[in-house]
Length: 310
Image 1: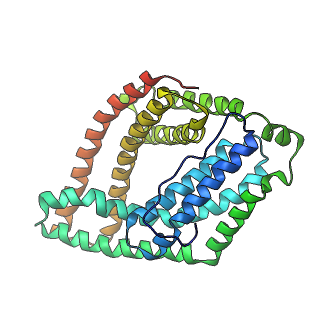
Image 2: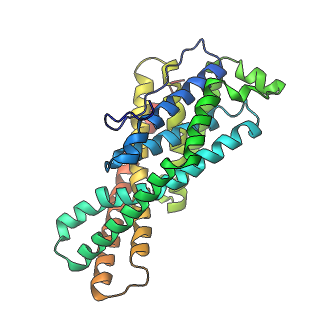
Image 3: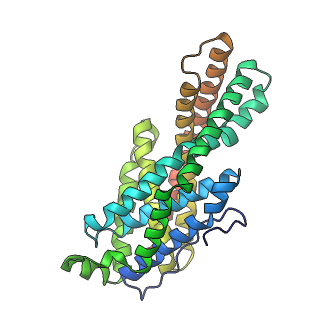
């Protein structure tokens, strides 16, 4: 898939079956993640379409989630080097994605309402320059020798099942156990964590909402990885409702990121126009967060009603 550019490629769940071992499922999920990353590589390097960057980051999150979901049967020394390199790439792509979201999702409705405001136009121009700089940094990372070592090494590690090179007895037994047993344990633990994080939802602080968002994201990835093991409407309903929760909490997080970016843009520059534009942007963000909190309550109740599918 390396070098192919026929439009941004979304993730496709690995085809899992109940007859698989944990090892089989781990290999399949990792292989799907590598394919997803490589399918968007050329577009990320060459195209201005921000969706390539978004999909590359999704691929990284899925790969890192897979390492965590399947890590209990594996020694930490086996997983840590791979996680470190995936974390490095994520840190290089993240800033570019933050600016993409600000410029393509946060600013357009504000500009549609207040586009003639001079400070807002100056802000948008400055953001455009910072976005281009962050995008160039992301492309440098993907063109680097370290990135090539990462993708080639990861592909080889998955193909050769490199995690089996140094197994201890517990790891060996865990890898050969039925994937269904492992899936139920993971899904139950992550479901309980989400329910715990969501207690008292209406009064949760920003920090606690962030922890809830992380718990939901981890549960959703695990549910998506293992969805092929289950049949019927319940699994699809759970995934749909989790997706809605994740979208709402992700938008809340984007609003917080946008506020941080506003401060970065205006650092060291204070004029009347700038103060007015800053207040406009932060005020819009506060209103957006209040709206999202209202949507979150309904999405949370819908999720709780879905129950379990495992």
